[in-house]
Image (cartoon, rainbow, N blue to C red; front, side, top):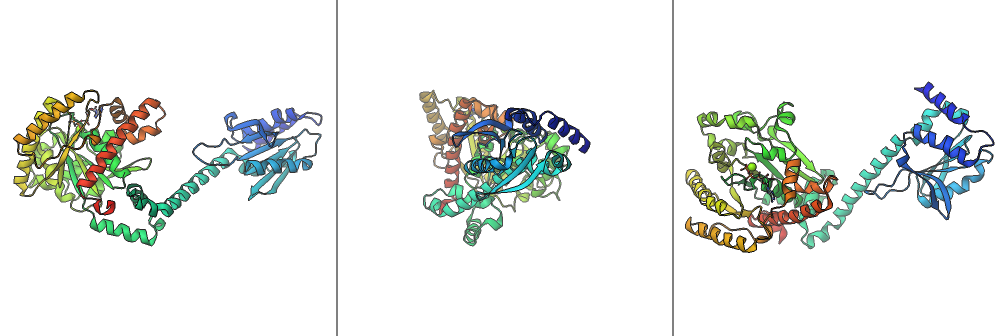
Length: 497
Ligand SMILES: Nc1ncnc2c1ncn2[C@@H]1O[C@H](COP(=O)(O)OP(=O)(O)OP(=O)(O)O)[C@@H](O)[C@H]1O
Ligand SMILES: [Mg+2]
């Protein structure tokens, strides 16, 4: 390795003579040096105008995500020039660009300068032979690896500053009722980043909070149960709620919709899934949870497995099997637990309903889907009688409606009210307001197929700007849905008030 560098450097230096010009030094020494330091031509700009004159090289492209100064600037002179005479020039460039490092060279001598609080200090100086001799140190200081390390530290520091800043303006946010964002930061930040005041408030919220276990229920297939579960959960989390998702459908659409392959990511890695939770008395809820994160959205999931489809008989033979999940969910620390069952009235549906404190019914606005609601309401009544406990229906959430057919939609709403009237649910079951209805848009299924919640669409460069705009529109609806749910479950009334 070392020998390689020695001969490479010797070759580079042989390419110039004392009578070479500045451009020779740039092309034959500086650019080859930048390459062996790990930079590619995309990493630097040459002949950058600074202070009405031309700076030879600016290395380290400013990252659009960061407010970051220039990293390394290089000023090149002809070999006939003494670099000591040009120090003032590089000093000026470094001050005005704010660059961290400077390299001044005439191809024979190399001076490295460091900029700290606008005080510029020479930290090393090499002749050609000493550079060959001490190359590893030269490399350590100027290589791309060091540069990347620097940007990552800047990034982390910036995030900390942002968090501190948010904490300092949180009081104002609270007064403006923007508590969702405020709570979220508190829930996600490390304990040592919370002030005493925040800790006190957090513990009050925990004491007061009413956690909700909700089955997203509709025995009709393909009405948007899984899609609603994923994106509603993400919106709730965006609003500061801790959310657990339970996939109790052998199709495992929820699991895959969160980018997790039940075979490769769970079974092959020896992790547990819903089948273990339901059949092994010793398996606890926390043993089966996997955490997925999407930017600032974090969702915990109990994954499913196709194996669940063969377990109906086993479950039927298990004593008190209907209460299996209910028992495992007795202790948890989530604001919302959303259960996504299969489209049937089978065993796992009973198990989900028995574990739930309420039901949310997603439906399309189509004649058949609306007619099927009658059965859903009947089934809920049966479970209430079985448990002798109320199982409230939080409401009906509209999914996949056609935004262009408003008169058709109105006629479907009339039908829906007829069904509610007929099954005695008129005063008990609310159709969620239109601001929460989710339109049918291709982007919704695209994100699900790609295995992430709609929020992640923003960061996917493969999506077009129209896709991203459409995703944004649907996200607004999911936020409305989440806010509505928070309100009607009283989960945050105290804090919103
Ligand atoms: N708003 C929407 N716009 C467009 N497509 C959607 C929308 N919501 C859901 N879909 C798509 O419709 C299909 C059915 O949705 P989903 O899987 O959520 O229904 P489901 O009720 O969970 O189905 P199952 O009964 O099989 O579990 C999926 O392909 C999904 O991507
Ligand atoms: Mg589903």
